[in-house]
Image 1 (cartoon, rainbow, N blue to C red):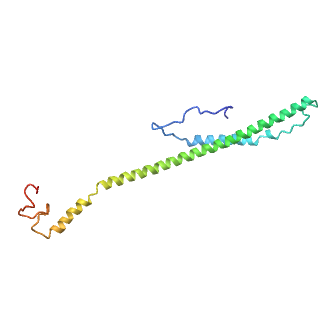
Image 2: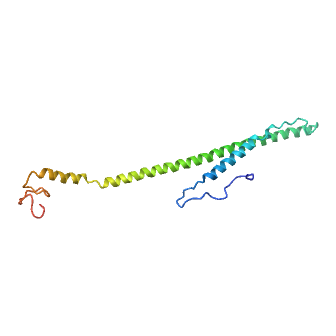
Length: 170
């Protein structure tokens, strides 16, 4: 068990160079178990069950007052223990939510990376499309093959004219 006081981990959680946190499932399970054990131990204690008679410290007025103050202090400590127990359960739940959240983040990040990869692949594939040029050449072949007096590469009539010259018509 841990000594009384605030618990501060001995070491910062290990991280990869990019700042990601490495999660040790075994360490988280151990922490959850220790939190449950501590909370159950405090809950099972009989500290709150103290019954103290008015004359437990004697019959004098000062003894009766001491008994009253003792019961008051006891209730305060019992309420504090109940609060600590609640904290332990809450911290255990927080550890569980952390682990679940980190797993979800990893899954979402992996899915996002897959979507990004698919998007990049789609863009790369789309950048190689050449349907316009292919359609142009196919149309030339199909439509100009019926006209033997037209050059398929330029669409200009064979044998020269004003429309086509040796310098490409310009």
